[in-house]
Length: 389
Image (cartoon, rainbow, N blue to C red; front, side, top):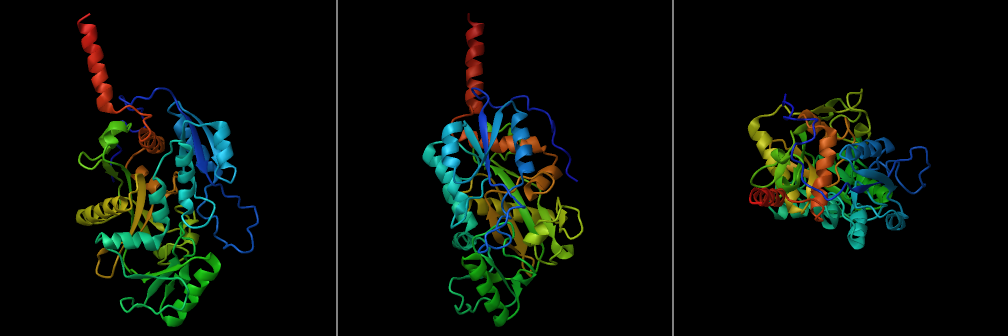
């Protein structure tokens, strides 16, 4: 078990300096589970959206540092609401309103309006949602991915390097959308049926890849090359590359509602409840495998130019070699439930500190946080001035 970090739960003694408390808008799409979905959308269409309770705890975490917050629904009125409210910075977890690259919609709007925000920028959010494009970039960078093929029409010939069983899922969705027990196919007939199902129901290409039969893991990280200058907890971050790697979390789907498949239905079950996967953190694996998984997560993150925070899913093949599955540039932040939060908790990182570091890293990109070296230099000048008065 990883011991809690020193000073966990307390305000760091040397927080980075800011000019004044911020007015922070938390941007998100909220699930309305009572609302009827349109007939032409899948039943799991809102799986990526957040519950209002998650928004409230994020607001409370931000306010614990003296800032003010407001929640803004990331709907079609967002441009006008931002104009009226004029926040200093936006804490962005919005999933977008549909279409290609929907997770890039809000960052694009904020860039256009010159409003600071947290998390990855436009390009990384657009790429990471497109699983096929992400895999192509990783493959070109010589990072390990299972053989894959995108089906656009539905009757494409299967490439010879792909052998059954295969795994089929929507190419541009998250949170296990379009993934259930039938996602694993064992012959041409099942493949054709599943691909046509994805094309018809999700109105997007189907990603087909060789099924990886080994254990599944997810690895979260925070930071960037200069994170130590702006973080409330500089001791978290690596000296060389500036990343903090969370403990590896293993996802044991053998006992879930969809055995062997980390599906949307499995993800919807509360942690620890019957039908939920096992969330094992830190994963019971050899140190060498831990290093491999964390190293892959950093390379995957950098390859698509993600920034500040992400979570990468990895699965072992039949030979025990790790293969990259996908990267989430907007990882869930529900305490006690979302993978990244479970990883942070296993390390002894308080939820408030997790949220505030994401906020400070984002704010620093817009000149809202004074770099530590600069602050130290100013203090030294001030001290010398007093000495020689």
